[in-house]
Amino acid sequence: MPRTVEEILRHADELAARFENYEPNDADELDSTAVKLLRDAIQDRSEAERHVIEAVRAARISGMSWSAIGTFVGTTGEAARQRYADLLA
Image 1: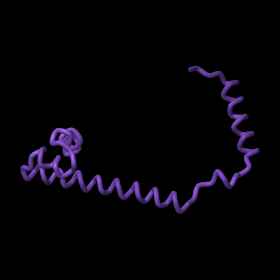
Image 2 (image 1 turned 180 degrees about the horizontal axis):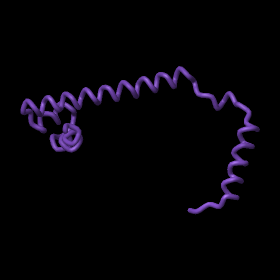
Image 3 (image 1 turned 60 degrees about the vertical axis):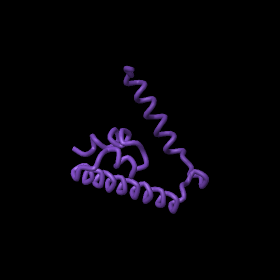
Image 4 (image 1 turned 180 degrees about the vertical axis):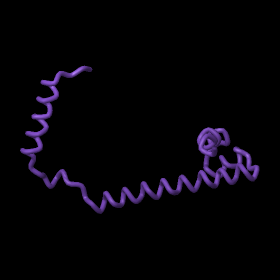
């Protein structure tokens, strides 16, 4: 969608006015403790997934079947293969 210089400048002026007129509202603030807990939980989940991928890689190298791996990760062998096979390269 092409925009004219005038449209871009008008939009910039609108944003500048919103910034200049902004008044903080306590109701809009996030609880920093909750944000930290959430961020840490997401990081932990990401690290756990990396560990699972490493374990699946080791299992495949040792000759474990996708069916057995699926049992460990709580799914079918085919679903495990679809989920992890491309990540093992």
